[in-house]
Length: 144
Image 1 (cartoon, rainbow, N blue to C red):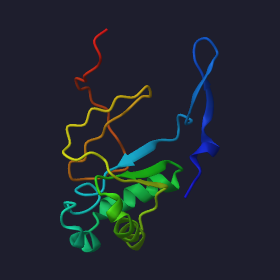
Image 2: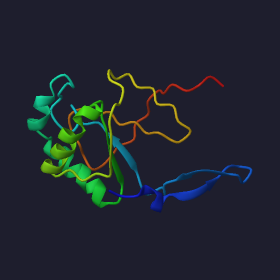
Image 3: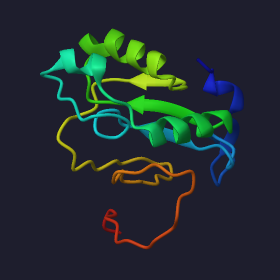
Image 4: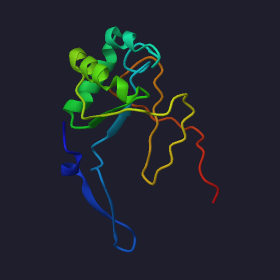
């Protein structure tokens, strides 16, 4: 596992005060769901199926490509701490390269991510590709 602290760049606000460091612009910080995104969609209530879930080949290829390019790969899943060992073993046996595994993501979707850093959302719709395309969509922001 990598120490992401080694690639973070110092950052300051408009008044010159230190603020949270940032990644260099060429490094992406990928947060990737597991169930239904890189493999079969398995509910937490059926952990026995997690062991044999089929990985999506394009997900494996593209995620490992991003890893090899130096991007940070974090799997962010609704699986619980009770599923950690199963999940880590599954990822290793399938050959996924990654830096971090975050468990206990809230279930149910309809996520509203509020952060002081730029966030780009990419909805998985059945296919991983190496390239992203830009499209314009309406987004919700706080009232001025």
